[in-house]
Every structure is written in C-alpha cells, then in structure tokens.
Amino acid sequence: GKFTTCSDAWAFGVTLWEMFSLCKEQPYSVLTDEQVIENTGEFFRDQGRQIYLSQTPLCPGPVFELMMRCWSRDIKDRPTFETIHHFLIEQLDCAA
Image (cartoon, rainbow, N blue to C red; front, side):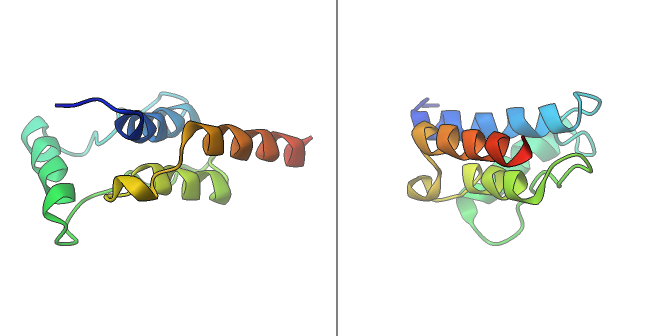
C-alpha cells in the first residue's frame, strides 16, 4: 500500500473514533479479520456495501461528520490536516 496524507486522514478518523469510544472497543470488532479485509475491498468497489464505524454515544454530531469525511471513498473529498485542525479548534472554542 501507498501511504499519503489522504490515507493518514482516514487513519485519523479511526483514531478519533477510538478516542470517543474511550478505547473500550476495537474498530470493526463485530467483524472477523477476513470480513475487515473484505470491507476494505468494498470501499474500492463502491457498490454501497461497505460498513462504516458507527457514531459513539460520546461523539458530537459535527465530529462524527468530520470522521465520515475522513473516510470518504474519493480522496479528494477527505479533509486536509489544516482543515481538521481548524475544525477541532473551532469545536473546542464552542465547547468553552
């Protein structure tokens, strides 16, 4: 595989999910290893059968929307880290 800032954005979305689940659950824990690999293939086939991580109870809606953007199939639709940074700062300011 090739690692880019776009693949890093995907991974960061998963990291956010882990943080908001308080690391009490492994991503895709309901899937077997084989199903995780198959699910990855579904993103590339783009037939609407891919399984996304669900919103955790502690995750605010706007943050989950950011995660979903991080997991966009089209890498052009994924946010840059500059965009992610500004978004998170904005969220912190709103929470203060």
